[in-house]
Length: 233
Image (cartoon, rainbow, N blue to C red; front, side, top):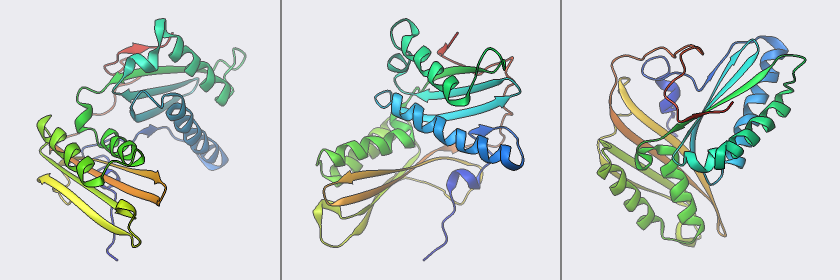
């Protein structure tokens, strides 16, 4: 087997920053890492219908800032911000934030302009279609054509497993444009997903090439938040 390198980890600090930005050592590192996993699972479960793509977590001495990138911010925010308030309260209970310790949770919701070119959302869309028994070839070709129509320079989708209920597992790939996976300056969005079908699991990998990036901007401090749609009170 060939050695596989994760496209995102391969380009960290070259044209992409970490999705979790904090520092800790020893047992505190272990605790915060497990806390990050729990936060991501909780947000994805609560925002299952909101098309959540990325979740960025940033920690400060008395503040946990969570930035949620979603294609449907209205669903995540809710009427008059009720849904995002409930989400913030759930996160505060999870990390043990109280008035006594002064810890706070801040949630920012950022809208994805072109969801058809987001690798995570493409993978989730194909997963839903496979679970509804739609043919894998049709789902892959439609996703590739929509992404190219929205401005992607290249798309590659790979599915593997018992496709169409076959007795023997196999792998199929559909691609369009160019996807330079070995070029460090290329901005490649990558995501993995799994479809749970009656025949077993079907793995989905998506690569989306969005052009070249020659420098990465450092993340803005908490006093200058990134572009947002809504900030919870």
